[in-house]
Length: 251
Image 1 (cartoon, rainbow, N blue to C red):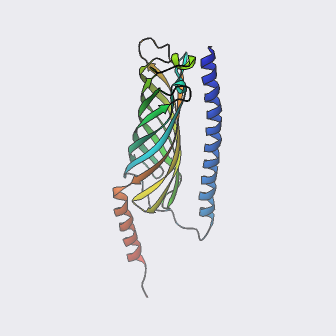
Image 2: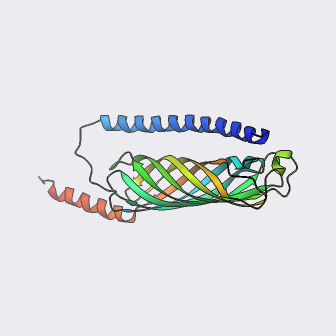
Image 3: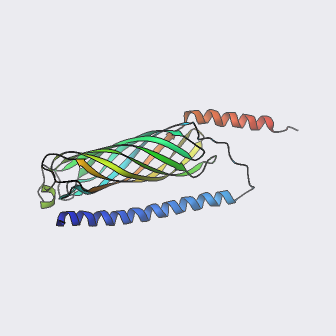
């Protein structure tokens, strides 16, 4: 195992540990808040199913950071640093708490600290399953697991450091075999919501430029803010409210 690969793996392990700690704290706080809300007040009947069969549209802006390896001898973050991007998804509810979605995103990666003239970009596409913790309330913590394809372009032509010169300039085609996202959504009205999310994508580049060594593991960490639209949910909520009002006796 080369020093470059060991250094990249050490960076990846440190950042994965920090990311996991942040995600754990975020998830525990979200669940605790939801449980506190559920324990207060008079018990209510289950809310109507507002997810199954509904179309869900999302768009967001995000910060993306790469770590790990472009190949067995070269670290991605020797030539590319964090950057800004955009993402979107289309989903359909398949149950009270479950949704299947297709997601895509693109980010422009900045220069690395050891290579001012380097950089790159990365694009991803995936299919995944999302679990929604709550329904019928304004606050909805959620988790998504997916897998898909990644295309990363790395520019190492201006490389000066030894590690950066090990990276081959060109396009890398990879498989994200694990995409894990955790987030929360706040909906001031039934058909519209927004909120933050964290995502980590693990994968391996199977297609590489000529001259690049064999595949190794990479990771991308993402923090984003997204908005959500559910066009049919507003109509359903209005109909439910109308039925409730008509069934309430007047005095």
